[in-house]
Image (cartoon, rainbow, N blue to C red; front, side, top):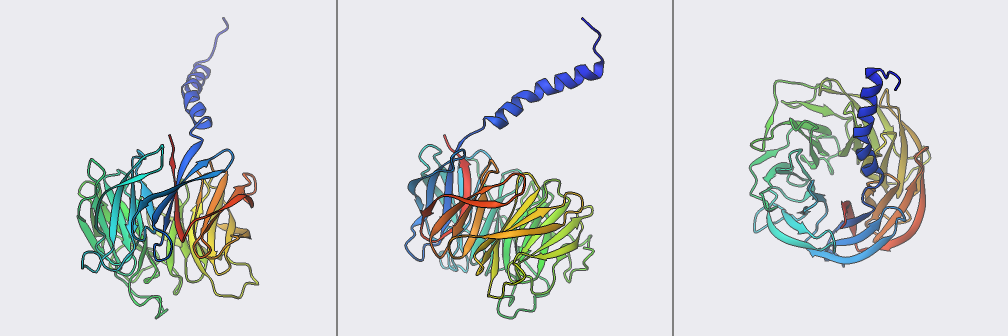
Length: 397
């Protein structure tokens, strides 16, 4: 046998060890459950489920998964055993609050079984996510202007809030939409040290210090943003009247992309040791658009090469390319959502398709994603569901 260098041996061994991961990635689950959160003020009864084939894109209706009031945003745990839904209401058991409901989920049938329901500790909860440990649920309360942390118990039930903070800062200039703080999005940082909150009323992304052991939020007054935000703690500030709604991040964490609901823009922030400064603001609308419009959702493609946003009014999905070095965006174009008011969309786990929920026309529309260009092409049949406002995928059995 010829002599083989140690470097070649090490490389060969590493490739051998990585091979099972590669095989699993190529032969991962092809079937998913698509859960659809809705508003129940019309014909909807709660959360609906579909079986989704990632190869064909086919959606097979599984019916009503669970009856619950206004489940306008959903999240599932890492084990895919439990699903959590906000109940976007102004009153909960006499309190000025909405609710949050925990369910166990059946990955064979798609059915959800309610475990319990607790107060969100603020009116109209509109976003929910899990911290990086999965031990806490984070809730943004829009009308209440508060954010809360709920413990997730061992059996998937929710405990009462262990931390509640009222957003505060300088209000934006729009007296109708920015009359008070309006928390619209909340998620934990990659290392679980901070919690980010997009507040539409304040034109800011507030950054709370987070104690992942106790679930406690606090204002970190020892740091300040390069934007010199008008608050007493760390934040990133947007142009007045932007109305930050949702956020996406680059996979390496170097860039933060903030969707402005009110002016339909994306503001790009560069991360300098977890201190953010804006480097670009770009419109999601074509230059000749003149109607009324509000932006709704933003998502980064798994490849990190493309970013998408939805427009309500223009009723379109905007397509952007991402410069990996600078983080800046280029608008590639847009495509009709073939429905009215695209409140939410989701990229399927394989990164090959994008599904849009049109709230006012009650339909879900599917697109293929060109892996080279990022451009969208409508495919498949439209699915009817009353008032869809949130889509999430869970691997099926």
